[in-house]
Length: 272
Image (cartoon, rainbow, N blue to C red; front, side):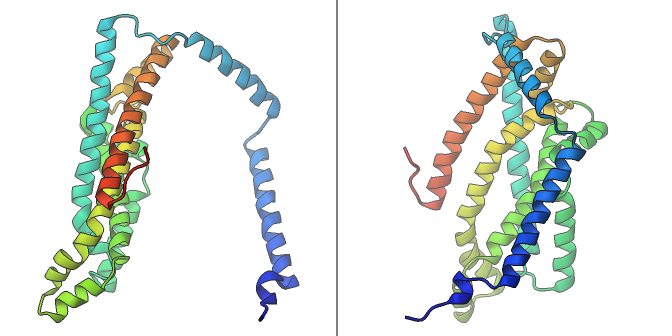
């Protein structure tokens, strides 16, 4: 039997190089702890204070039914922000994904410019986009929708283009050999392969963006996040725990529904 000593017994030079890399990472980790003023005593003390906060949060309560319905309306607003921001971004990113894909548009200049534009948009966090749009269009859910739209547009464009580039070319080549044009190859050869992937990604991001919509609401972009920040400021911890519980239940329901839809799109059965 032929042996492969180079694989199972690396050379001393490779071992030294691996050891140096590990030492460098450990050194960077330790340096980060020092620079960030990590203090175990403060951590233990903070955990104790966290216990007091949790005690003040019990039992979760909105105080009155009128307040509960106000929070419920804000929660529905948050879900609407996530829905509109996610699916509008996906619709706008679909043609851009084809433009960015190298196997669809092989022109080097167009590919480079479109990729850099997408990377620039994707590099800005949704919280920063929320601050920008709140300053542009004012407070409210419209700013939240625009913030999620911009953030997810860059992400979807990148993910869609990668899925298109990874698609099997044999179907497109078969269509071309039978007399079909390039648009026919995209429509009948590539789209059927990538659409289930696109749908799965969009549903996952919808569930994730429901949480993100809560965060951007804290800076004034509408939804339940604004109420959450307000109740924390006025020390109404029972209201805070009730809001958190409402958010968790909503996210869990959306996660279950989107998981089943994702498995239906990709042709697999979800685990019970």
